[in-house]
Image (cartoon, rainbow, N blue to C red; front, side, top):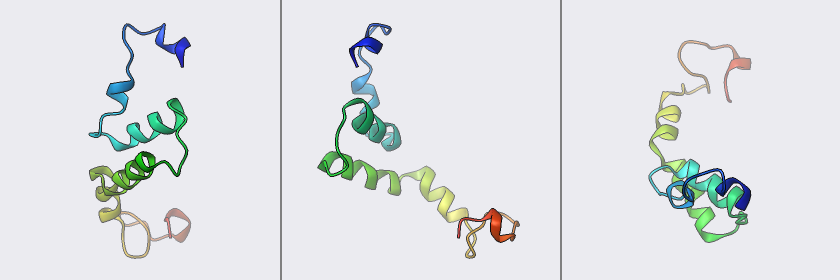
Length: 79
């Protein structure tokens, strides 16, 4: 981790760990800080991703058969 810090003017860790973007926070915790999946903070952040606005928007737009928009071909869905 120290090698990339030398390329920046300041340590971005605090910014990457902000709770306003749980996906970025998750990857900072797991990749940059080497936290395990069972770590309570990692687990809480994963749950926050599931509850985040972008994920909810995608899931709400999904049709009941597992596709988005008018494409009803099964190999284009996520069933």
